[in-house]
Image 1 (cartoon, one colour):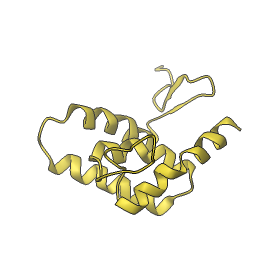
Image 2 (cartoon, helix red, strand yellow):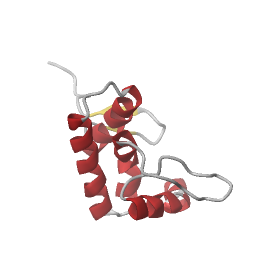
Image 3 (spheres, rainbow, N blue to C red):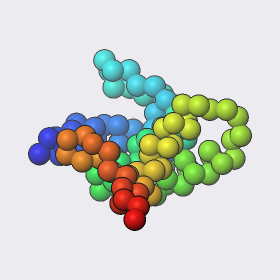
Image 4 (cartoon, rainbow, N blue to C red):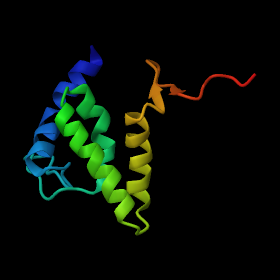
Length: 112
């Protein structure tokens, strides 16, 4: 499937996340070398990929990192918050995407 191919191609990212303990802040796209750990928003955004990769321990570590650091760091981190809405919302099964890319929110049932 296309998803399996994409998940396989993203395994260097997963390996870097394991090595750093968090997704890399920067990656040189020519060499594949990465630097320091990125922010908590990066951890949240990586959750769907980690789940699809079968990396349950790494998934849980990044989930906790995103939750803990975003609560503790009260600075206005707009992009981290947006990434967290995406990643944490997905992890908490608040929504999914359909095969056509459509949003499937958990609250999609109609009111009576």
